[in-house]
Length: 160
Image (cartoon, rainbow, N blue to C red; front, top):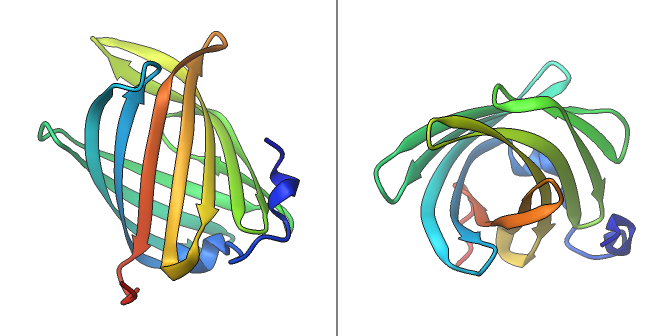
């Protein structure tokens, strides 16, 4: 998929405006066969700090596990971003175009007492009524492991 295909699609995604404040997300992880393994919710507090968009993400999984990730995204130009988080290896690369944002990175995931370095190809799409849809494909050594799907809504969005 090429992000330029979304340049004229509406509504346009403005990352800084969308994530400034409280955002709630609902998600799930499916393996490569389509089996749902985990569901979760995320409470996100976003704010601009200097030249970075800071996203404080608090996860609660359906098995009671909790996790936290803090993203620091820096806009490099009108379309390009780079991002950092403690469990991300190196720098994440992002590109924004129209209603879509593509974000690629390597996440260090703890699995069965070991740390796996997993590639994420993350796509966000802005929809009507303030809904942001996120679909990420996870892979390792070029083999697709599964997908993460999320739906975001701003806490101050009163549309139904």
